[in-house]
Image (cartoon, rainbow, N blue to C red; front, top):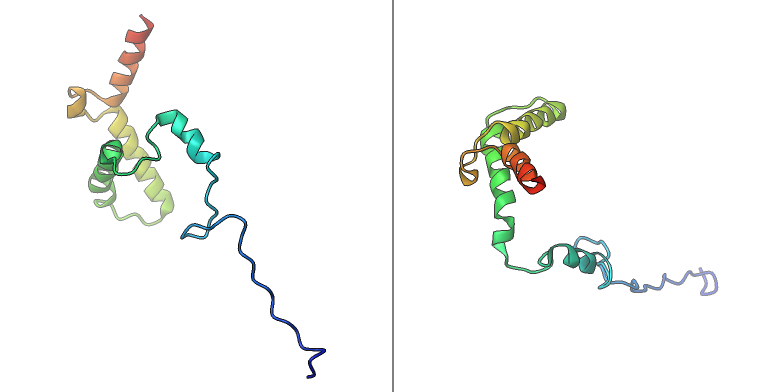
Length: 116
């Protein structure tokens, strides 16, 4: 092969927007991050473990009360089991933090109190 028919290697160029470690593009400063900041005010702050405590407790309860106790044969059974447990959690299970009332009871009575 002579030098006239030899191909040059492709030139590498950097992307216009940097990539995060997972390979996705980072949002620009005026996109998602700033919009979500107006909703909650603390969505982009770091080190706020108090913000996640309620969700973490919900997932812990779900795992220990439903998922770890059942051997699901397929995804359909898992979806049904988790859905059943979430209905129980919201409609039937009393919560100590809510004065041993269910979340749905607190939600409905709160709506009635605010309407009155």
